[in-house]
Image 1 (tube, helix red, strand yellow):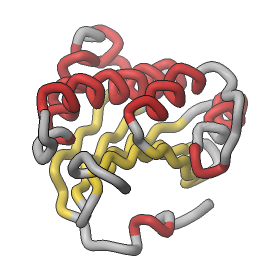
Image 2: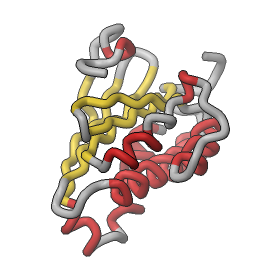
Image 3: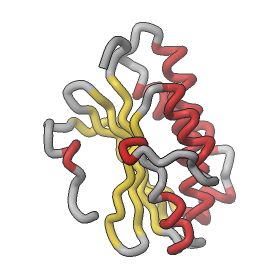
Amino acid sequence: MTGQPALFRQTAFQGMAALVLDVGFFTSQFRLCDKIAEYLGDLVAQSHDDPARYANFSASLINEVIELAFRSVHSGDRVEFNLLKGDDSVYLRVGFRCSEEQLALLRTVDRSRGSTPFPEPARDLMALAHAVGVDVHTEIDRDDHITLTLEFVLSEGPR
């Protein structure tokens, strides 16, 4: 798939956060994973009725994505994070390069495709996404680059 997925053409987005991490630095400072996940979870949860509870669930899910990304990338590469706010959702986009084998596994990480059961390493991520009510989409940008997009609703209630 090339270009922006259809969901990004439907609305204007406001940038909330952007971060690019070098894998070598990150693996030497792996405790940053929790800090990054907590920070992004807090941003995602700002408009919810119970922001502390939603931030906790969101941070757990974001942590799974961060760990998945850093387990998948080549040494010396980077992982790119973008947090975007739309009209009714916040989108976390995590992009990284990985091997063909990892791409094949990560292609299945897409709730909209109805793939079940999910193979590892996607199983825990998808179970948590389902429990939190977050849609997960995948986009193959280049032959070896994937972007995982998590769609968080801005507030509780029917979707």
